[in-house]
Amino acid sequence: KLSNGQMKVVRTANELDECLRTGVVAAVLHFEGAEPIGPDLDELEVYYQAGLRSLGVVWSRPTLFGEGVPFMVNHTPDTGPGLTDLGKALVRVCNQLGIVVDLSHLNEKGFWDVARISRVPLVATHSNAYALVPITRNLTNAQLDAIKESGGMVGVNLVTAFLNADASDRTDVAMETIVRHFDYLINRMGIEHVGFGSDFGPIDVPMPDVIQDITGLPRVINALRQAGYGDSDLRRIAYENWARVLRKTWSV
Picture 1 (cartoon, one colour):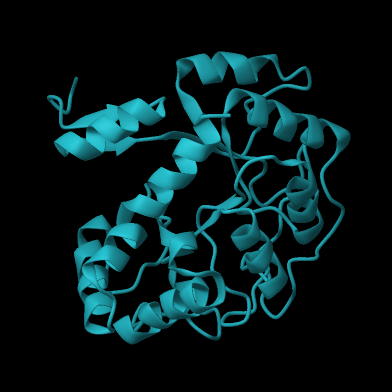
Picture 2 (tube, rainbow, N blue to C red):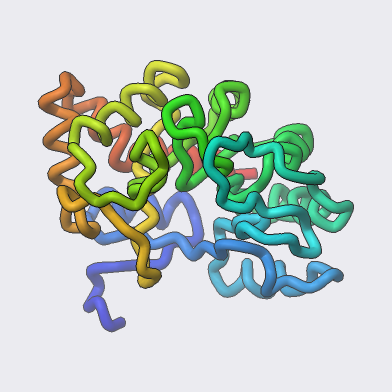
């Protein structure tokens, strides 16, 4: 109501497609970590009825469901045990309901647990390539390959520590560095598996000076265009890839 019809929380593929057709901003309700859900999983159905359509199994801490990956530099994502039995049950129920399971913040063993269990495309909404920045929150080539094989998606994280080769918080990140991250993922996975992840929000995390906030995304698109990406490529990166994965997951 506050948006005067300019934004809509979407719950179905049809609602998403209607927003894309009419230019209304489509918002997807997402929890970054399943802590609001108890051990009987009953709350998941309640949140689904309220509009929840995407869920991170964990944030970067241990929970009932598994081990979130702590933020460490020069360390692989293999930081501890995988999903608990309850975490595995959570993934199965998310599949049944049609809720995206976000792999961001999961450690490597948890990632592979989800990959074995899930019947829908694998998604990491805001992670980059470990090959470029060796931090625990980024994804190894094997993980990227698994996401590709599932028909899934990686959203490029624009927080500076995910972009700078030394994982520093320096905000003087060159636009060429950001393009390099897109290039790597696209060359590894194919353009249909990469989009914006961004990680903007109310929390105070350092963003590149050349972007700063969501209003800077058109500058990234322009840089990608100058790097040789055509209009059809840019539409995929900006929204079409995400729409495809949401349609596939929500139709289960």
